[in-house]
Length: 292
Image (cartoon, rainbow, N blue to C red; front, side, top):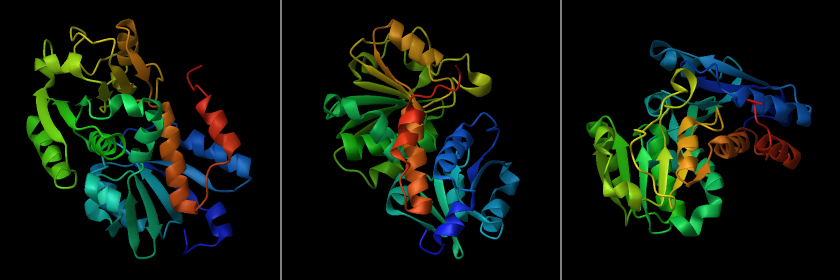
């Protein structure tokens, strides 16, 4: 942050903003990094209801908060309370990292970096291929944007319970993306749909599979998965969700949300401090399983 000294950055308060997010592992990640750097910075959970969202964002700089991550359910809602968005966040229409300036909050989207890092080894496999994304929230928006911009995906179908919401997402993204076709299917009508077998990638971009919904699946277990499909669950706790277990039994290659979380965290850290994670921290974090 150009407006702060190195000492200020190393002693600042950071955190994650959301609702019902006590399960978040972001504090553990950043505390590990701060400890390796010997910083006195603090990373907290800011669990706030919708009525307190605007007040929190406005009060953050005066409270000594230098930056914070944003998670469910505020990745889209927070935009109206920010002073400015960077280009990617504006195009995606979702924010998951905020830098606190004296003039107001500046919104960024590091989900793009997370998707890129998590799926890097499948780049050639996905180029020009159809993809299914379960969900139509902020994470689904960012995932779709990343797959088109960085992987060359040209055909995306949103699997949702609210088609109207998905229509809005597709319309918003279509304004900023070219050479891509968007489609929508209701999650209850996915069984037997040929797009499932044709998909090179299926992404779960919903919270189904974590927290109070840990034992649920984002799509029906009767949906027949192809062993040629890569299945990516953005959920990082547990690292092995029921959805990934189901996909592995079908012979699919699977990717957990853990490497995405680490890449997101490092991108946010870079925005707030102008520095990268220590290489040792990145290596240790990628090998860490909090549920063991």
